[in-house]
Length: 177
Image (cartoon, rainbow, N blue to C red; front, side):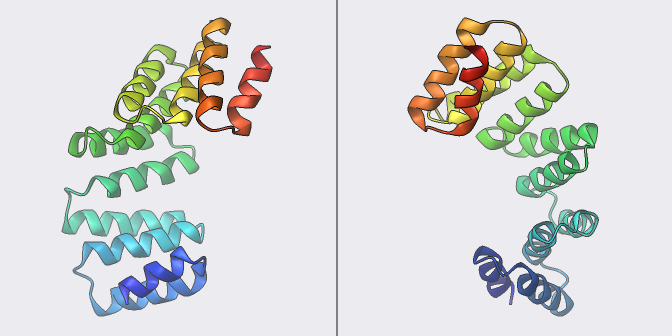
């Protein structure tokens, strides 16, 4: 049932996925993977409070899964609870310190906090793990733009565009020019 719920979610049948995931949990409440699948279905259905409850249940069963912390961080960001998001993200990164996406999200939190030096370092750490991570390169450009280093911002936006032409670095480049 859990695999079927996940497949439905993958194919965009989010309401059906949620129903099936709830049924799977009714049958087996001791599987953290089922709780995580339920949380994903709840997130897809914009049921963030319920998803946090499901993720907490999954963590009670197995607190060593970094993705659970990253998912909670993402929900907290959607709810504009930056401090809670940062806490969950840092906890997840203790479990999986080389997760380039987690490091990238930490950089985004630093950007929100206007801590540009820390943001740049996080984006750089993420790029060291995944050199073609254009989103991190782009966001480094944003951080340097905020620090008024326009020339470096232009280079970073151009580098991001060379990896993947996307509206976000194009807009950043246009802002610099």
